[in-house]
Length: 354
Image (cartoon, rainbow, N blue to C red; front, side, top):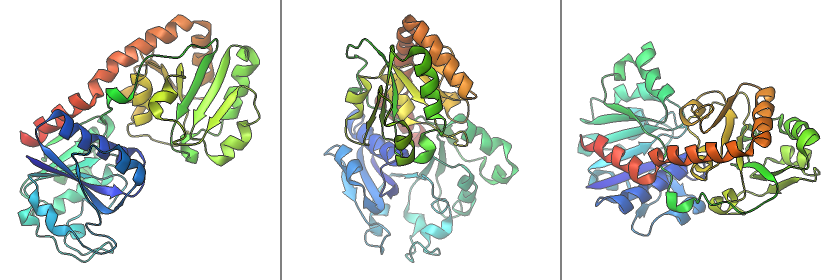
């Protein structure tokens, strides 16, 4: 079976890394072939992650259509929607939007499976594609997205399409659960250095914990926005690392508690960073909303927090009860088996071939 994965791949965020790991998983865990199809260009960090057996086709549509004919070669196309409001529209593929003017012969495409990784609202536009493509399917990043289609009246037109919820695959070979030795409890997280990834109350939380346990803890952050970095860089037990300065697997060996303290307004669909923290055996403290509810089992592999006091409460609890760090970390490792690359690819192949 020939599978193509199409998306915007010029950045290196969660959606792009998901594309890469889906492709890697397909060639490593199945007999199927896989090709990465870039709307425009391919980010070098994503390209570096790809298995040598994966074919890469760049500039399918942008800056001008160059490789559109390749779309007809596949038994199934996985379109990773990321933040696009256009991919799900027939007009995008028919060359009737500002993106390009090439009219794809949609009747020649055997199957299109749309993975809504960041926003679900564009899925209702798939109704416009149904008269052109015989086999349309929907993959949702989390349970909230899945139920959105059932519950929202605007999505009645696509409820009949086959759909599943599918976690983002994480390669266990890239993450170890073996920790380095330390006389401190090490708290931190890795992420893109975007403002919404780093809550504006981080300094307040660090100060609160340091006031009580400053001699017992250290803080280590990989990927910090400049304004937050300026606020905490002079705190003696805080380490700030630039994004990509350390491989994630190596970084997580030096982290005991994973602090997913993102902006209060942020609805994270399904965080690869959280998944990697769980796989590395870290209890995860996260905001109590959106996809975090799918990943964090409160009191089992971490804690869901409604406010600053919640983060402080559960950090204090783990610092006072370090045996619980090990117990919740073990649970995280067990839970992470469900989103290992092999398991996710098995579910994906079963869905597109059913």
